[in-house]
View 1 (cartoon, rainbow, N blue to C red):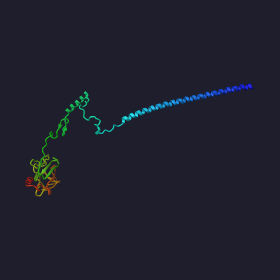
View 2: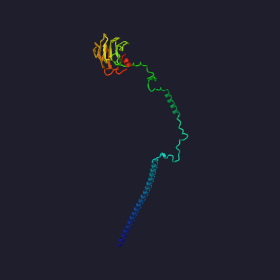
View 3: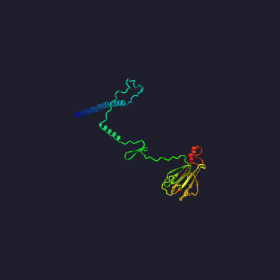
View 4: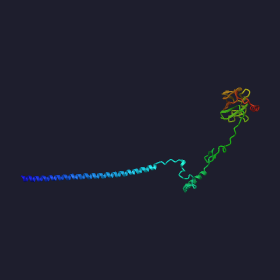
Length: 274
């Protein structure tokens, strides 16, 4: 029995020793693995630190260059411009400008030729369709001079019928109305119902300072403000005189408030009455 116990006890010890040695080997392998991982981690951290430092240095250099380029130039005082010894005189020989290309020179020459052929427009005038220019003052047809009348006492204006828009000045004394050339108010515009001479007359009396309208006894009736004129009637500004198809508007200048004879010299009075 003792022999059997010794054999089993020896086996147990051998088994325990093997278990212990196997456990030690596992622990040693674990320690080696942990150590290797720690070494790898430290190496990685060292590499990362080196790379980070390199990137930081690169960014620092770039920022410095950008700041140096964007830095504004110091303000220059015009009174200190010659302090650096430089001369403010212009160079004796101006720098040569680059000559134009042959194509540009040819285009400029063609434009100059076109401008020289172009018709020059004057300051006042109109250009006709054929390119000629009409000068309003020199090329316009000559118009008949406007009749000037001195010392008028009133006016007759044609507002209806042939000759609409025509104006006649009235003088002191009698102004006959008709189609003839010897009439003061010549209504020769195509209205044949108006007699050639003395169809009607307007008289300005400088003593009474009033106007009178009279008819010449013709067959065609003279109407004053749409009423037949039978005898001499006084007229005033705004009255309408109708003869045939023609309507005359009367405008008075001289009246009880104004006359050319008021305060006039003898010469003016003679001209006004003539």
